Amino acid sequence: MRIWPFARRREIVNAVTPQADLVVLEDVLRRNVEDLLLVREREIRGVAIIFGGELLVTPRRALDLLQPRFKPFGYTPFLREERGKVWIQALPLAEVTARENPLVNLALFLATCLSTVWAGSGTLNPFAEPAKLLSGVPFAFTLLSILGVHEFGHYFTARRYGTAVSLPYFIPAPPPFIFGTLGAIIKMRSPARARNSLFDIAAAGPLAGLAIAIPALLVGLAWSRVIPIPPGYEGVIFGDSLLMRALVYLTFGAIPDGMDVLIHPVGLAGWVGLFVTALNLFPVGQLDGGRIAYALVGRHHRKISMATFAALLALGAVTGSLNWVIWAVLLFFLIGFHHTPPLDDLTPLSPGRRLLGIVSLGLLILLLPPVPIQVQ
Image (cartoon, rainbow, N blue to C red; front, side):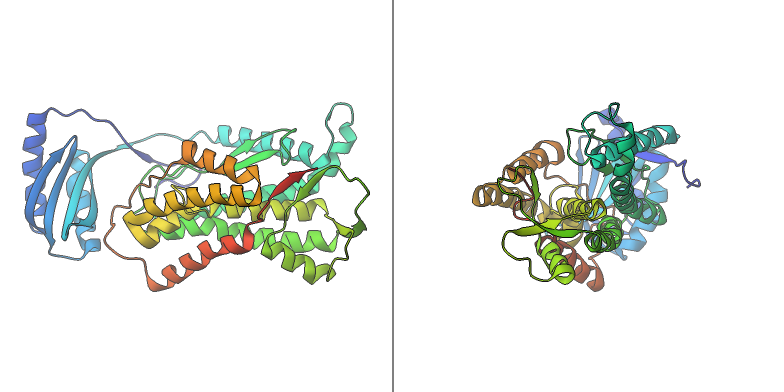
């Protein structure tokens, strides 16, 4: 793989192969499989060629041998277990040499710098008060640091495992959107090799982001003040998660009635970092939490995704917060419940990762404010 920022990428192509050719190819691939799998069943399903039986070597060994054997034919092996058999599914996965365009990533990042500075300044018309934009720099710098570390946690872990992945795409969202950004994403252009690597790639982002968000929140709270709530206050109220409540108590002690924390912009960016991490940790689809859930439970991941969707709707109903209903609808239409399996879906997650995965999903309880944002 080439050195950053240019990379080879692989993507699934919708190849159309005549059925007669597929029959011939199935016979060729079967001969490449028979020393690794005691073949009991064979099937051609669309452009996929599937062999079922008993594996004669370890899954890792089988994958190491099958990948170079299938590659000349434009196919990639996926290993899974179902109905008491091991299945090797050959799918057409073509390697496409393509250069990333880092100028697109840079342009989006610079646009997000501007939009978050604008949002952090609190001014509605930056042209009328250009000097006031400087007051938005602490918020923007802190928030972009959290988001950037989160995404590059994914990026460098994926590159370490040889998984094709894009550079981060930052998403600007100028005011009136309150934070100036919708976050950042990276694109995984090839499947993870195994559940362990899938887990590491997924968990690296939230854990790296929290390593910046929590200290930023502590610093921001140290620079914040406790003030009386103005009579008839109208404005935005940011909800407290359990972790936020604990850090506020650690900094100020018990807050008297009629008082509240006037949070510093750096602390607000830390709050956003915790909230974004919580959203990403929902075990749905291909969110970070969804990938962690797949690494933990495999094909049962879809049931967990659907249960989480229902739980979000219930949370919205119980708290009366439209935040969760909107998020559930976005997950349903934009993310969905599907997750691409790793190449080796047989090797279970290591015990240490399994424990860390449960802890990571459990962070939702600490990071999730029941009512994230209220406008009064």
